[in-house]
Figure 1: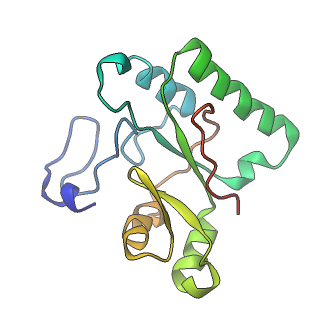
Figure 2 (figure 1 turned 120 degrees about the horizontal axis):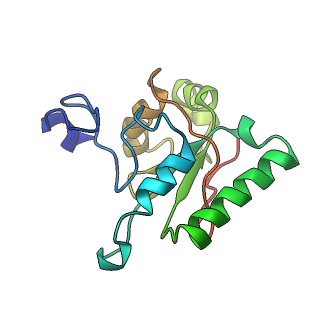
Length: 158
């Protein structure tokens, strides 16, 4: 992200001049305790006082939703986030690293691939998505497991 290129290191472990996290989303690689911990942290924010709400993006590998049990776990954590923790918003990018790498190599074959980009959705083949896609392709970036629904947008399941 361009704004991260001029920002020094931050207390959450983000290195100097690297991309900033969007909204209340954790900086890439800092969400080491998983989605439940992220939800618990975000739920502590006074969302009723924040104009425009709280953006939370999470990544989910398609391999995490290969059977009905995994899907039910996702549904359960989503319900808990909104009903118990009073979460406000969450969106997911459900796409594998392999798919992103293949799309970067042969974008003409992935014209319909939609990814979540810092507050909006974009086709992966757009310049903005390709720039942001670098963060997702970084070897240190880890997809996180199950997340939330109510304001859930599953943008892509490849």
